Length: 128
Image 1 (cartoon, one colour):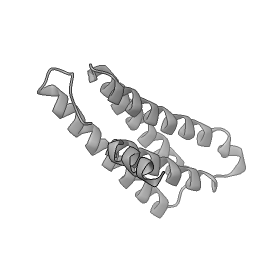
Image 2 (image 1 turned 180 degrees about the horizontal axis):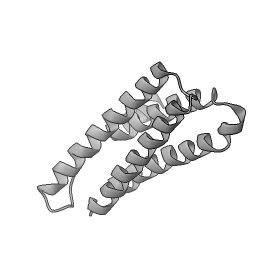
Image 3 (image 1 turned 90 degrees about the vertical axis):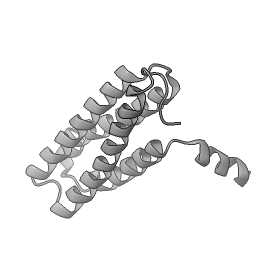
Image 4 (image 1 turned 120 degrees about the vertical axis):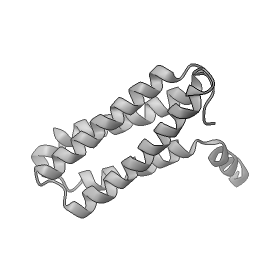
């Protein structure tokens, strides 16, 4: 059974693993939001994080990836804005914001690399 789990992890995209780790971190941070904001801004951030993961999965399954990658990039930009807003409103301390921003920047660099890789092959291939 553990061999199957290891095989799944090897075949899984690194960007997907990074996104799942970012979501796990985000959930721990969102638990400390004020009660009022957990169901407003916190819910919006959760929705955006899951949309990001969904777009990564969809993009990996599609042959033509360009438009999906553009949606993924836009969703990541939205998440960055939401997290920045949470920091500016005082719901996140600087250390948590910095850590979360680093996770998102790493995902952003991977998305950028993915975009560059499909630019050379006409939008079909990419990271597997």
